[in-house]
Amino acid sequence: MLTESQDNFYMFDLPDSPRSLGDLVGLGFRLIRKNWKFVISIFLVPSLIFSLAMAGVEFCFVHWAGAQSMDVNWFVIHMAAGFALAIIMIACQWEIALRSCAYIRCVLNSEIAYEDCYAYARRRQWPVMVVYGVSFLFPVLVLVVWMVLFLLTINLGKFGLIGKVLAIFFGFLEGLSFVAAFSFTMLYTALCFVSISEAEVSAREALSNGYQLSISALPRGLSYVCLLAASIFILTLPLYMPVILLGIWEGYVQGRMEDIQFPLYLRALEAASSCAINIISLGVALSGVTFYFRDVKMRRQGLDILEAMKR
Image (cartoon, rainbow, N blue to C red):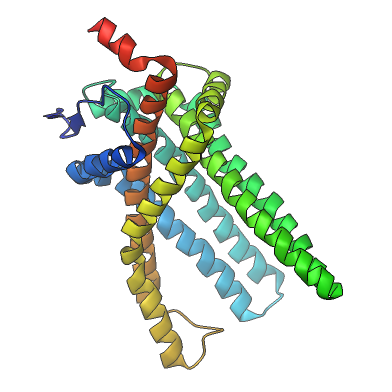
């Protein structure tokens, strides 16, 4: 059943019993389909500014490198512009984090109005940002560690046939372990963020709660993260296909693929598609992990029984 809040957010009657992984993903997509205007209204401005700032940073680097000049003034101008745009990107991520917290509270029916949910996020912005920062640093740490392992494994190929066989073997194992480790970081940090958004707990308590919930059903959680990520990828891939096809066309027209000078319209289209993909991915991911958070609490902590007793 759906009910409409005063902010035109169609709230579900939250599931009162555990669901399958496919049902949880389906609920997340259904919620976004019913609330796509609401999701766009809250995430459009910071996402669009972030995409434009990112495109600006890329342009500054490409423009400086393309000039092939070591002039100090030229370098300082480009680096100063890139640094200013990077500050704007951080500010946009800060705002996206607060709005994500407010959106999760909307999904959980914590308040009737979005303004009340956002006021909660703004009031508790520091612990929210600590958890949000961990959600960036933890996956990046995993990427760096496994990147180093991959580079070391590739170097094994220099030691003859045995080295090549070992490189293939260890590379396969590292690929599997990377998928498992990266999926765990996404599961853990997502549950931590939902925990800090749900109730007034400290950042340390939210990190602890996320860990307990993530390891309580680890294989199921990793499967859910992979299923949710694959579903989002399939949904958003068509939005980026025009950029890919036009990029290939520009490379064909210009006669070189290694050093394409992308025209302005293609960069604008790339920023627009990135903004749309970010909004859709963020909305589906937040909805999906929020439903999974409740599902784990029902399975491991009897949340459905406690709610039934309250009713």
